[in-house]
Length: 362
Image (cartoon, rainbow, N blue to C red; front, top):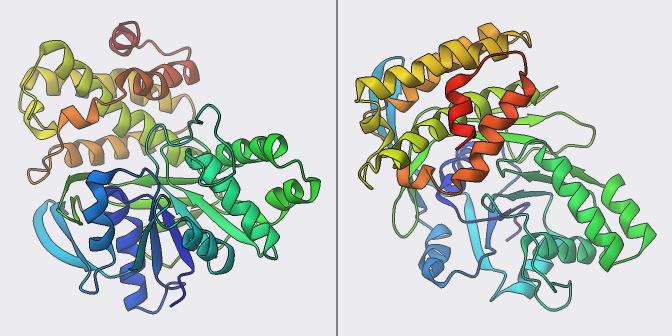
């Protein structure tokens, strides 16, 4: 069994996004091949998920929501994952697969996935994801250095470039080999990507419930290898407009609602659709979009695109089938305020944003 796609992360998001896309593409004969999924966290509570991801019968992804204004609900089976491993328990096998089989590497390691650990090294099994990736890349380099495409799916602007700079810097300090550092920049393609799908609930031990809307935008560059062909995967010349629209409309809207949810001490179980049933809160969000967000995009020539994306976003927020809990959205709130609101204000310094400023200043 050979798996040309190696995925770091077992999140419900990846299950309902990349794993599902590859599964559907495999059925159509349009994928590189199956996936090996690797758990990087060592979280014992997710041990059951590892085995379930690669079960022969696959795992379920339930799509619920509105398509063209009509309710839909369908269950799909994801069968693209043929192996599931853990860096903690299966480091040698992960290293072999990375060095010998992988053509495309995917990652989704959470908001703090690129954080380093004091005293971490490439010896034995590194603790942080960046150091793990550095050790694996060095193993591939020593094994012949076949070209590789890395497609990070973390919600970080220019995520491929950010990850490349981090790994090259770590290599210069921990593996001072000029040929290796050159290989990292010349033979490894670091793709900038944007992912967008609301995946609201897990299904145990593996699987997820997600909305119909999905996009995986990947910026075109020489040597890039895609894991598959799929209608939701878009190869684009410039990722910036897609990043800005998602970050400063959909993600910004989530953070606005999470801020109101926290300040009012609303129920822990409240979801996006529930809080928007409050006319005052819905009206406030719509005013922020209309009077502060869209004018910001318009000054950059993206006003029409922003208006369309706002309409799509509000329809997604009002999806009656998604239990998208605000308690989950509110995680790492202060960091999200910076990336989603303050950065937007800095991008549009001449636009008045009193409501967003009130959130940013808290």
